[in-house]
Structures are given as C-alpha cells and as structure tokens.
Length: 162
Image (spheres, one colour):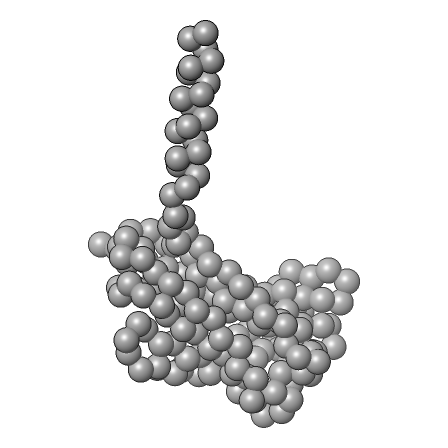
C-alpha cells in the first residue's frame, strides 16, 4: 500500500513539473522560399519572445540556409534586420559563406540538397524581455536568386551573462 502512495506522489510531482512553461534554451524555425527562387521582395521574418529570466544569458545566433547543388554562388549576402522589444530595427549586411575556395559545399548534404547553419553572432546579449523580430532579405546581384529552398533562424543559449 505504501508503494502505491509513493507511486501516486511521484506521478503528481512529474505532472506538476510538466506544466511549468519552458525556458528558451533554443529557438529554431525554417521557412520555405516560394518557388525556390528568393526574390528581394520576400523577407522571411521570425519572432522570438524572451521572458525576464531568459535575459540573464548570452546567445549564439545562426542563419540556416538550404539550397540545391545547382546554386551558382559560393556565398549569399543577406540584409539582417533585428528589432529589439520597443526599439526600431537595425540592419546589417552579412556574408554567409556556403562553399570553400575549391567550390566544395561547407554544409551537410544529402543527394543534391545542402544545409548550412552559419553563425552571425556569438555570445549576443538580448537584455530585454519581450519579442525580438529578425528578418532576412537576400542582397545578391541576381534577383530572384534561384535554387534557395529554405532560410531560417536558430538562437541557442551560450552561457550566463557575466
């Protein structure tokens, strides 16, 4: 009989822990590029909401790119727009290397599809609770940019802030 009460108590504790809202350890979302041709006018955007306890950490921020083997360039330039909660957006032009100098793709590949997770900021400080908005616009000379399948954002904890 005592074991039954212990089992019920253990299940109650596990159920109570499962109801707690998760903290933001990592965020990742990828969006499909319409027609697999990335036009200037298509700006995939991502919203990440941080709770007050999440602001005590540093974060690594990545851009995910998925393309076919037919992609004609060794890199892709993007305009990265970041809007902090309550602030206006800031924009920077970032080069995302996709191949080495010999033309070998840097990402992982299956068949003729290649995936890249490219760091754009290490140990970033996201010190405001609220919703952050990130958007990406391709900034190459060719428009639309063919053979780009997906673009995405990954944010992961990199340790506590000093």
